[in-house]
Each structure stands twice: as C-alpha cells, then as structure tokens.
Length: 254
Ligand SMILES: NC(=O)c1ccc[n+]([C@@H]2O[C@H](COP(=O)([O-])OP(=O)(O)OC[C@H]3O[C@@H](n4cnc5c(N)ncnc54)[C@H](OP(=O)(O)O)[C@@H]3O)[C@@H](O)[C@H]2O)c1
Image (cartoon, rainbow, N blue to C red; front, top):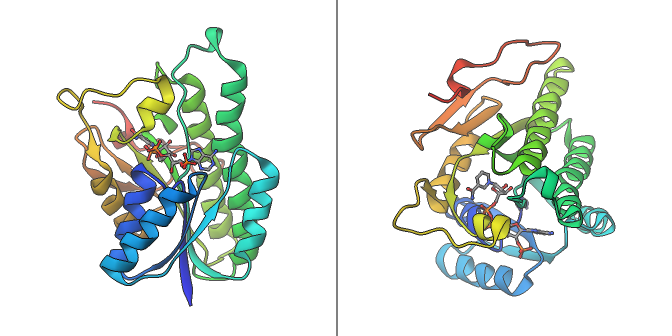
C-alpha cells in the first residue's frame, strides 16, 4: 500500500493538501506538533473519502525528532513526500529575536534538508515524487520577511539542485518545488502575531493552493508557482545553476 506524506498538515495549506490528495484517492501520513488536529483531520478524511490517515506527532525544529520521524516512516511505502511545514518571521534583521530566527531556520532549512536528503537517498531509483513547499519569497527577498525569504530561497535552491542531480544521472525520482503566494492561513499570525483582515486580504484560499499542489504533482515541470495574479504557472528551474544560467522572465514582478 502506498502513502502520501505531508508535513505541517494540522492547519492551512498542509491540511487542505491532505484533503485534496485523499479526495484524489491517496492514503496519507500526516505530521505536525498538534496531534489532536491531525486526528480530527484523519476522522474527517475517513468519513468523507474512506482513505487511511496515519498521524505522527513531531516537532520538526528538533533534529532528533526529525530523524526519529524518518525512522518511523521506514515501514511504509511513501511514493509522494511533501515537505510543507514552515513558519514565517516578520522582523527586521537588525531587530531579531535571534532564538526565534534560529527556530525558523531549524524548521524551514534543517528539517527540509534532512528529510529531502534521506528521501532522495532511499528513493532515487523509483518513480516517486518529492515536493518541497517554497514561496514567491523564495525567489525574491520579501522586504518584511528577510530571514523567512532566505530560508525559502534555500529550499528553492536545494530542490532545484536535487532536480538537476536526478536528471544528470537519469534517475527516476521526480523532484519539485512549489512556490505559494499569499494564502489565507495562520501563517501571518505565526509570523507577526496579527490576524489578517479578511475584508482586505488578497490571495488564495488554502483549498485553491492545495489543488495547485495536486496539479504540480501531476505536471512534469520542476517548478510550480503562484503568480501575482494568484493563478498557477509551471516552469523549468529558475535559479542560476552551472547547468542553466537564465532566470525565467515570468518569475519577475510586473
Ligand atoms: N500562507 C502563505 O501566505 C504562504 C505563502 C507562501 C508559502 N507558504 C508556505 O506554506 C507552508 C504552509 O504554511 P501555511 O500558510 O499553511 O501556515 P500555517 O497555517 O501556519 O501552517 C503551518 C503548518 O506547519 C506546522 N508546523 C509549524 N511548526 C512546526 C514544527 N516545529 N514542527 C512540525 N510542524 C510544524 C503547523 O503544525 P503545528 O503547529 O501543529 O505543529 C502547521 O500544520 C509553509 O512552508 C509556508 O512557508 C505560505
């Protein structure tokens, strides 16, 4: 039996993505710290779609727990692995709460690196799929979110680099980066402690983004991103690489 694993599935984009993949017929492993929320999601998915959902509690900012998570997953055949868990930090670099910034780096960079590396090591010979969730802020620095942007640039870069690595050796593992735009989730509240005003919010719903992520899974391009018109686009890797020095013009803000 095959499973789709999604980190950060207790709320927001990850939760909606879990529902979308279940709707499309996938059994799931969902990961987050809030196990009660994962269990509620599991019950809902079973009632609606009759898909199995295995819930794993894990604090991905703790490296030991990240390795333990991967060990627990070894008993399952995971053909789609989605590193979605992430957090923002809306602070000037010169005014950082450094402990919080290090926590964001541990979650966004360290956990994604460990899980991507282990998944690629163990599955590079299979036609499986790794999707790392980045951001438009992972292709240009967002003024209000500098450290967050830098962590997402890192995710975009290692994911594109892994895509090239698979291609150069003709390995079948599919590697994708999904760059979300502004999406109505708890993200902003976590990043700056403020709840966005729903009357002025401009962006996608988490359900729209979940359906984009499913389309990204089906599509053969390496990069899927949400444009400034809140629509979905696909492109080849965009970051200058020794194998590809061009930046795709559609990534640039109009
Ligand atoms: N919303 C946006 O505008 C936007 C735009 C571009 C990209 N993104 C990216 O989309 C992804 C999902 O974000 P979202 O908008 O859905 O935010 P969200 O609603 O705050 O969800 C974040 C998810 O990550 C999990 N998480 C956070 N810290 C964790 C930790 N230490 N260990 C394990 N899980 C943890 C949370 O679960 P627990 O708290 O239960 O652990 C939650 O399920 C992130 O990578 C984010 O950077 C979001």
